Length: 169
Image 1 (tube, rainbow, N blue to C red):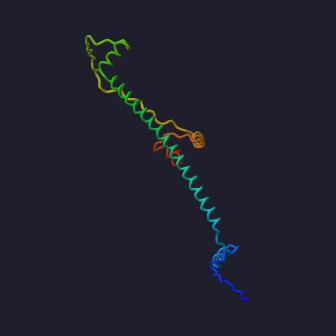
Image 2 (cartoon, rainbow, N blue to C red):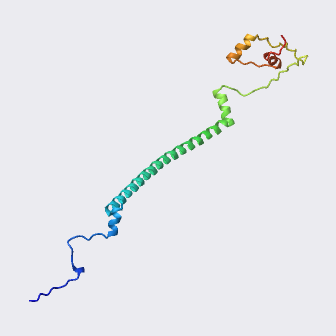
Image 3 (cartoon, helix red, strand yellow):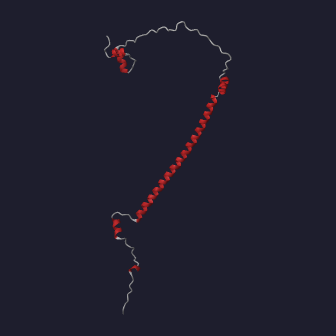
């Protein structure tokens, strides 16, 4: 009996074992390369970090928007008050308003007649001379006391000569 074996090509054979990665891939993993799962986790973490950064920036923009709105309202209020105060100043500078306040609130009346007074000129235009008093002599102990306590006084050239010890004694 002759047995006939059918030859099937290898491409049609299905192996029960998963295919082994090529040697280059195994060598890269052994040298510190990353697996597909590790890369996917890193990408997911990076996307999560970017999402958190986006949310933080968005919340800051919203907060600054609220602050800007509040400051604009404050500015508008101050501009309105400034305009009101300028109007009030102009109203009080009006001559009619000044006259009304002078008459009714301060009890003033308009001038009805003008009286001029004549003043005689003095006979002498010169004033009597003022008696000049010289500087009071200061003892050495007084000068030392003032120097220790930092009490200063105005001095002229003769005082500086006395203080240096070159004065007349």
